[in-house]
Length: 73
Image (cartoon, rainbow, N blue to C red; front, side, top):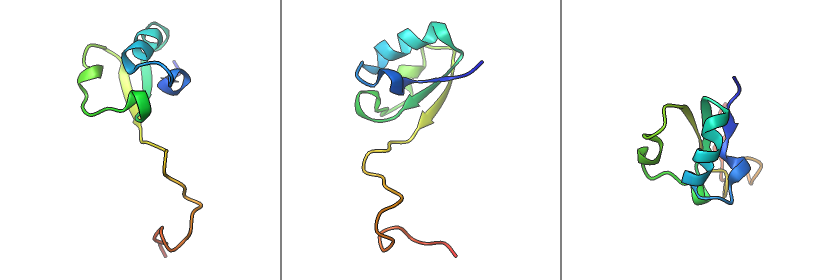
C-alpha cells in the first residue's frame, strides 16, 4: 500500500487531515509545518498507522548562495 502525505490537506488542521487520510492508507506522511507542525508525537498516538515525518521546507533553499551552505569535499 502506498502512503499519503498530509500535504494534500495542508489547509486543514492536522487532526482533520489525519481523520480523512486514516481510512485510505496504513502509512501517512506528516508534512511538519504550518497547521501540521508537530511539537510532539501526541497527535499521532491515537492512530495505529505508520508515520513518516517530512521536515519543514519553508525557508530551505538548497540552491541558495554557496557561502551559506557548507560544501562537502
